[in-house]
Image (cartoon, rainbow, N blue to C red; front, side, top):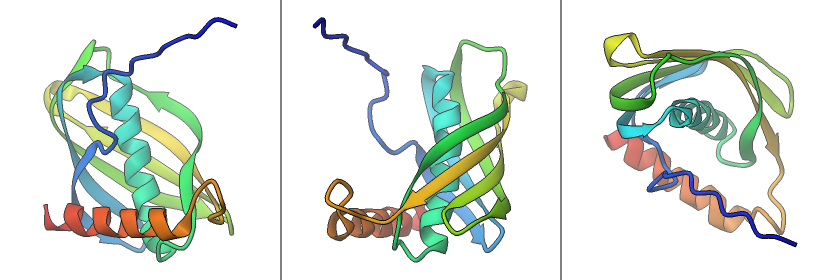
Length: 145
């Protein structure tokens, strides 16, 4: 079997740099890019929505991107500058959350999508004692800016 190596060029896991505001129906955040690939804009949008889900659930469940609907991306090759990411909760069930997410950047470099964020109970693969603490600390740091 051949091994395929994929290099995302992402230097770190966390793309969201600051939480500007959080409220029951959504979240406003900021992401800063430095000639990053276009798909990192979608990753910032997913991270923003998932952060809101985790916080809304008191960090008691694991959250992840389940699906992307109608994603519009700017016709550019790389992302540079500060983007404001706004995720508004549209609907939810006991285990899934639908958000309308917009990321607005410089020079009309805007993203727009519907993202479905799934949740699941922590288990042996997603350990609560590790992940709940990690995301609580991340939330606190991002709120401080």
